[in-house]
Amino acid sequence: MSLLAVERAVTVFTARVVEVEGLLARIAVLLNPYDVRELALSLDQGELRIVVEGNGFDADRVAARLDKVIGVLEVTHS
Image (cartoon, rainbow, N blue to C red; front, side):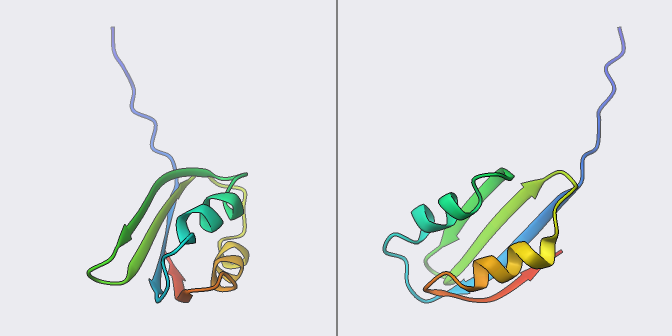
């Protein structure tokens, strides 16, 4: 029996953060319709990393929505 690995597209969002109280809860609500595979916050670096799996969404639009969250700065994606 041979198992085939299916490679799926992922988009990684990175943002500098300046405020963390309630930040992950706000981000989780914002990203509810997406297939979020990783949501990590580095307090040492002041950085938030979000990995979303799949296609069919506008990454620029998601980045713009993230940029509007209080405490989130400089959202990028790749």
